[in-house]
Image (cartoon, rainbow, N blue to C red):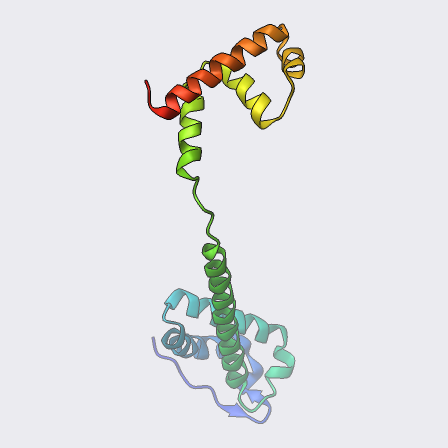
Length: 169
């Protein structure tokens, strides 16, 4: 593709034709930005955005001695802004990754494993009584059973837990 140079005058690009200006300058500006950002697609996007902004202001920009200078500066500013946003986002992500949540202690893992081995009724009674701090009467009401049944579940659940945690199986 042969790109012909446009004659620049104090009134702007010859004929003030934005289409000709775009065709004459797009490739060169894209190559400059590509060398800067290292990604051809991103460079094309940046230059395209700069030309869009120039188009919106073409009445004024076309009168500049060198309208391409304005477009180039806008494209470079856009690239710099993207670098800053990415750097800020990367720093944010690094800070987010630095939050370390400690894993469960070995005792907790053993307790969860032992609880999972209990029958569901015994497990529920032990958890409600010892962790939720419900009374025997409250558990009986919630489960719809007699208090003696809850006491039996608790007794059997505790015995099974003690056996499993000691490793008596």
